[in-house]
Amino acid sequence: MNAIQIKNVTKRYQDVTALDNVSFTFEHGKIYGFLGRNGAGKSTLINIIANRIFADEGEVLVDNLPAKENMEVHEKVFCMSEADLYDTGLKLKNHFKWTARFYDSFDIEKAFSVAKKFNLDTEKKYKELSKGYQSIFKLTIALALNVPYVVFDEPVLGLDANHRELFYELLLQDYEDNQRTIIIATHLIEEVANIIEEVVLINEGKVLLQETVEELMNTGYCISGLSEEVDIYCKDKKVIGYDELGSLKLAYILGERERLPKNSGLQISNINLQKLFVKLTEKGGN
Image (tube, rainbow, N blue to C red; front, side):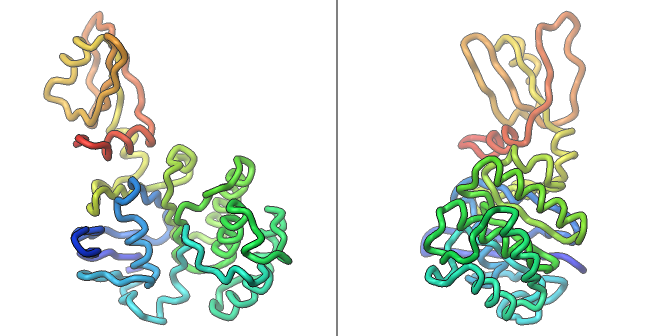
C-alpha cells in the first residue's frame, strides 16, 4: 500500500500522554491538512514519522516498510520542521550541497531557482537570516526534494503575505507537476482551506476526525437568529458550539440541513473550516 500508515501509536513524556493509541493513514497523492491546537500531538507525530523520536507503542509504515531506523524509507519522506535543525554557521548554498549528498532526489538546480523567486540570498549563513527567511530556506529545501511524502510543519511561520502567496503557488505547481503526498500542519487554516483535500484533526493526543474538506463542508452549517428560536431549532441536533451576542445566537451544527420553519426569522449559512476546527477543539466541545 502506497501510504504512510500510523498504527496504534502511543507516546508518553513522563505523566503526559502526547499520543494515545493513534491510528490513521496518509494516502499517496493527496494534500492533507494536519490540524490541532498547541499541544495536541501534531509535532510529536511528525517527529516520529521523521525518525527524530520513537513511539513507545505502535509503529509507522511507509509504503508497507517499517519507518523506524530504516534507511529504505530515507528517500521516501521529508519533514520540514518548525525547529531549527540546520548548521547556523553554514552558507545556504553549502546547505544545498550537503542536502544533495544526503538525498539522491534533491534537485539542487531547483533549489537555487526557488531561492531566487523568494529573493533568498544563498551566500548568507543561516544565522544571518530573519525568522521569515529561515522559514523560506526550509521551504526551499522541501520543495526541491522529489520524495513521495513531504510534511510541512508550520511552513509559513514569519512569512509576509506576498511570500505566503508565493509558497502556496509553488506548492500547487509542484503538486501538479509531480503528484505526491503533501501534509501541511498549520494554525492558518483559512489560508490552506482551498488547497487541502482532506483533514486529519487531532486533539489531546487522539484523532477527532479524518474527512475530506468537501464532506466536512457538506455536513456542517450555521443557524443564526434570536436565542429562543435557535434553541428550539437545535433541539435533538448535534450542536458543536454557540456564539452569542445579546439576544442573538449562532449555532454550529453537524448533520444534514433541515428546512427552516415557515415564517422563521432564522438564517442558515455555511460553516468555514477555521470555525469548525475551533468549535470541535475548544474546551467543552463535542
